[in-house]
Image 1 (cartoon, one colour):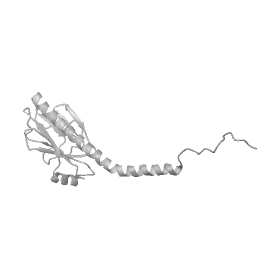
Image 2 (image 1 turned 90 degrees about the horizontal axis):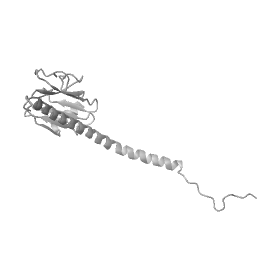
Image 3 (image 1 turned 90 degrees about the vertical axis):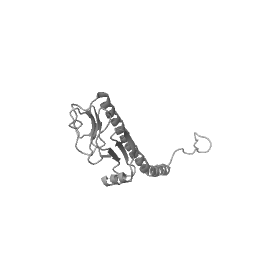
Length: 186
């Protein structure tokens, strides 16, 4: 007769079966599938707001630099980080520099260079106005300039930054015409 080491009823195995593990993974996959599109939209809208805020801060800094130094200051798109480009496309980056000789190019090294956004965002300025020139009195002569910020995948969340002739800088949501313009850029 054999004797058992454990007296009493057999103990039940503890653990998780393979089927239970597969069910948990399936539930997690479904929840991720449901949450991913709204999360992607949220991150895209956040990127637009961050870019808009960066531009507003840089424009305020450019205006302040012009007033404090008594010299004309440029805020313009750039491709190489050292010269202003003659484009209305700002995705590659922007620079802030003094322009004492009035040639719409930096005098020496730029004061600040902003990184571009690559394929993540589309940033365009008003046609015919590629840059902002702040004068020593804080004004930005010429016509008003509007910078339009769009997501490549969605035009409905577009934002703008407007610089008036008086040098006032403000951000706003895009209007219907600007949203339509963003949709054409996508």
